[in-house]
Length: 222
Image (cartoon, rainbow, N blue to C red; front, side):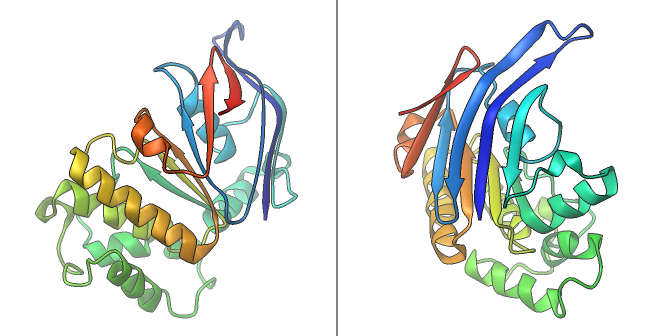
């Protein structure tokens, strides 16, 4: 699977005068792990949202596995996103009323019939993130690091070819942050997906095989 971002720009504002990204291009393939860094307001999260099909670019094209998702209808984009892309955010966004196991299962329930035994897949993933003893606990009963590990398991539930992480360690202390990055890289090695992590932490970014920096709306590989 390949990800291709070609000449992508993104403007905001009622008149489109606020340009956040300008002519951004990058290419990644299955097995690649990349970090995107840059100062606050440089467009890191915006770029991740464009790649994740959460909002369209103002110019340029994005292809995921040879397909331009923005040529699809809204229902088709939603299914494509569910089947092909996993997300991990700074805030875990777990559903407080659901157990750890139920939260992990959520992506498999959005479009029925894709997996024959989703519960087994969820339990195996939670075992891989060392939470098989927490299946029936709710988010409020977990530590911050544990909640983020549930979010990682949930993101991998549908075996996405593309895993996008937006400041996944931003709310964690240094020790826990390192554990979470260790886990992301270990699971990436096992799943052979494309992993993209947005981070302001240059020390963590240095652990990735490919690194990109956003400066004044433009993207540079470093």
